[in-house]
Length: 125
Image (tube, rainbow, N blue to C red; front, side, top):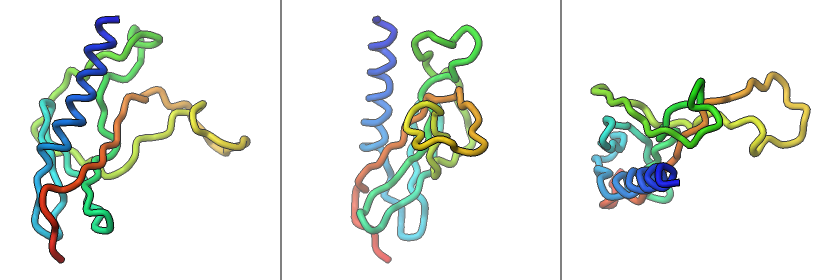
């Protein structure tokens, strides 16, 4: 139970960090955010003046001894920027509508978050 609470607090901290740390890049450049693990490059939605960081992993994939257990914190870091501009794959069995859906493969790597944040300052075209 304590492990689950720590993981949920960690996810909340990542979301808060992204919403406060988001750089307000100049027009035409992609927004970036740096968290404990590394830097992510998102995309900007000019209609709503929001930055999107999509498909960011927050826990290790539930494979092997991690399967059917509480999520394990992501324990890797990276030095190159990672692209966070597309949603993660949909988990089969959740949100899939109206069978038959052709060529669905089971997805086991399901621990991702997509975060939308207002920018710190207005962008100009």
